[in-house]
Length: 298
Image 1 (tube, rainbow, N blue to C red):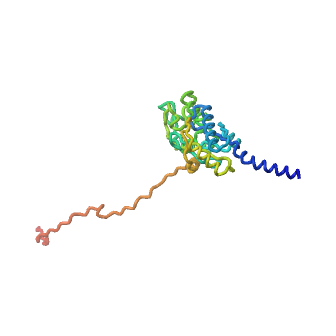
Image 2: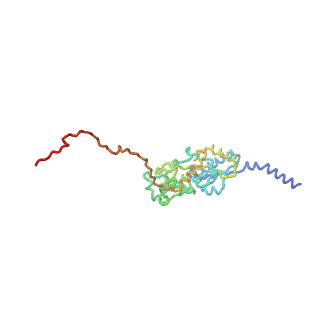
Image 3: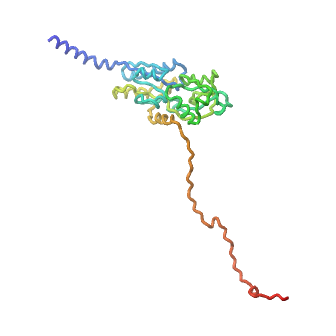
């Protein structure tokens, strides 16, 4: 009887504390977005922690925010939610993308090749140095195919490569430290440099639900909290995500084979009168004398 009473008591305690434990569960929000122009690591950390606090207020849970400098470290940490670089979302299936970062009012940014010396052109950069953002997500394909449209093999064209952990450091490598002559970056983040080659539009980082067992009610509350968050500091705000933006970037990473296209000419019907000049016909009566032969005397 005592054993039965104890078992019933445990069940009653579990039934009482179960919902409370779920309500007070701790969630985690991770950030890996090296293309966003945060001023420094403190600004980056402040942003993710601020967004985590806003999500926690919406869901009634404790949400811890943490910034990462390596996408593989983020994945190993298994966070519930994450802000992930657009290139990594295009190359890795991480989860449900529910929002896209709005930067300068847009969810895709034009990238370009910038140089410090205004007289430099693409051809004059052969053998020189290039800085770029190292994301760990098919960076070589991004440079050669998405940026250079398969026209340049960056590994053999440039004399040296300087991969950097974020776009701020990559731009500073060229503009401030003069350690490289060129850098690929969003046009809005390359102040003080000269654009020599305009590349493609690249989608901004996205907000991903990595925890696949979260209830739909929690996911809706998280999405709503993210879309209404606009603290600034590198990301203006958030907009509804378009999966086609990231799949479109994935297609740009493939090598582009360019072929000559011969256009089929339109059929042209010519009227013979357009190419032949007909002689002008004129009728005159012949004289009678031309029908007689006059013998010639010796």
